Length: 401
Image 1: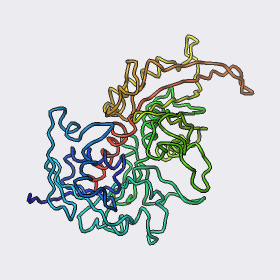
Image 2 (image 1 turned 90 degrees about the horizontal axis):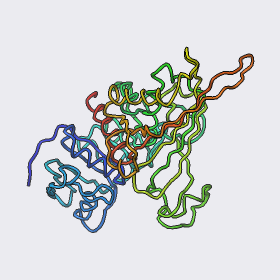
Image 3 (image 1 turned 90 degrees about the vertical axis):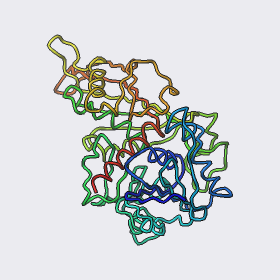
Image 4 (image 1 turned 60 degrees about the vertical axis):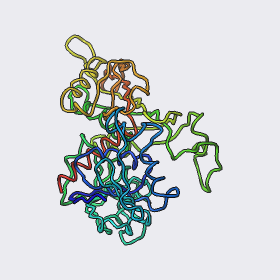
């Protein structure tokens, strides 16, 4: 049996798509030498069955190939079957299979300081911590910080963000994290992460900072929240399309990205912003179709100050400068499969940036130039964009506490 000493342990609650891929990412990371995953139940007939699920993935292939390329070889050892203790490629990984309610999970005994909750079940930071089954239960059971892999969702109206809670996107506002104040953190969503990286460079430039209205549609890959085949809706279901087969339908849906963006970029609160989602039958990689309307004064030659060239220059400069490892400026003609596993918050499809300028009357003003822009951004909504950004945020938090 391998004997090791561990100084920096991290916990993951849930082992769905985001939980599993977060585990893959953390195995590769040097920031943590022990990973504790709580799934709260038995899986398969043995611990070996659970490991088989972890090491193989229908979208991204095998764990050893992810870690080391096609020459990678499996190196996984079960050190204590009963207690769920294993070693993955030299790193201790322990599976907890008893408790599902956060306040009952043994984070304290395992020495876990940060928990990433990927279940999607505990999303309201304002709930009474004494009530069973809520996000703050992780802190009660020993964690110092809890990071939610989803936007906060408040149950009931008129609730406000607690003082110790914050929503962060790595690369946009992660430096506003205050370790002495913030204990419950939301890492927003895959779509919000990509969207924030499309909006922020434009807000940072005077030419494109005067956004009048905005809307976006995400053409989003299917997720486990959808039905494989048509199914009977649950009692009280209002959107019947969620129960239709994901694999052979284009399905209109909703997204909370516009609302979440207001927490990440407060300047967006005063802009009329609409957002929707269209689910399509691909396994990963999604596409944001962003539409913006700008007040665009004419330059000295009588041309609009905002054009396709101006917008693409802003993104190109961002990708080569401040956001060099978060925004990728592509001049290729991409399809979704080209971007699977791409480690960028968003990939700008620059060939399809378009602008049109018109003139409107706003009494007492007349002939006010207004430019409409259409911008496309790809993002691997699982590993490449979201899990990569999530784990970078967690690493930043861990080094701050």
